[in-house]
Image 1 (spheres, helix red, strand yellow):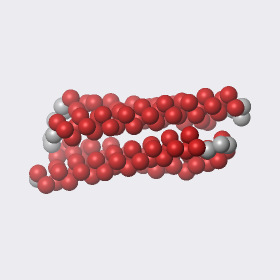
Image 2 (cartoon, helix red, strand yellow):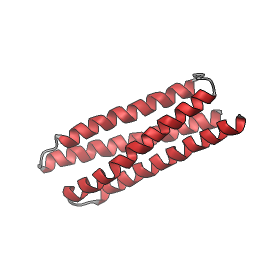
Image 3 (cartoon, one colour):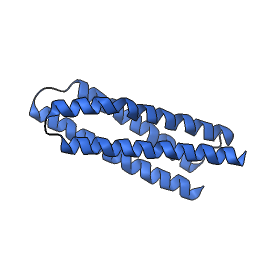
Image 4 (cartoon, helix red, strand yellow):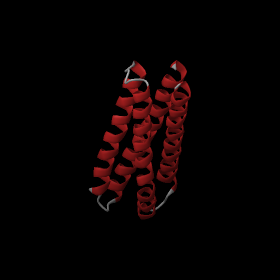
Length: 136
């Protein structure tokens, strides 16, 4: 049973690393592309992978919690809050993206929001992972 818990936790961590890599790719694209059309096409290509990995993190987290008989600790609550925050701000960003106008001001405002969102996501993931994996 202990081996299953360890394997589930390691798989959970692998998906967190994948998510961090996708965030870094998104940040690179936001800073590097010159035209917004190229940027939007590339972001739309990466967005499904981003949310698939988020759902995999949720699923592996549920597995780990089920094996541990759904015991809630502070680190588990922090992980849940961070995951919900990432999803909520992702939904808000998607709504902003869909309402985007073709003006440069609107596009720059979206880039600024997306950059802040991905930076906060990355910091939250790293801090939460350090909290969980150093405590356990």
